[in-house]
Image 1: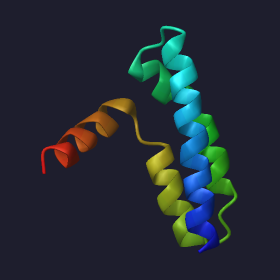
Image 2: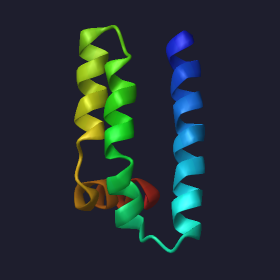
Image 3: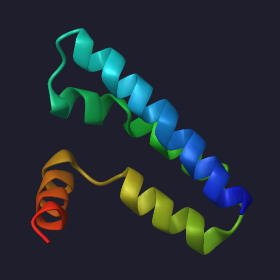
Image 4: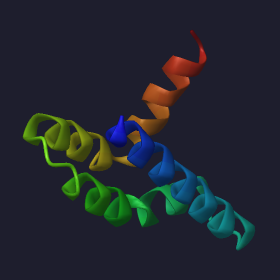
Amino acid sequence: MEQARLQSFCWQHLAALALALALTGCTGRQVYQSATGWRQNECQKILESAERARCMESANKDYDTYTKEKGAADNR
């Protein structure tokens, strides 16, 4: 339960960061790459090692892989 609340909180902040960067003229790639460190830091807060590893795998995903996976999910 607490993990879900933390993830929701994190995604809200990430969305706010993305919006702020988008309003300054950054591309989607720049926004995504600038948030990589933040995502990694949030993953380090997860106590359970397997879940932390999954989080880090996602946080370290490059932008091209992210957009391919997002596009595939959007087309379902």
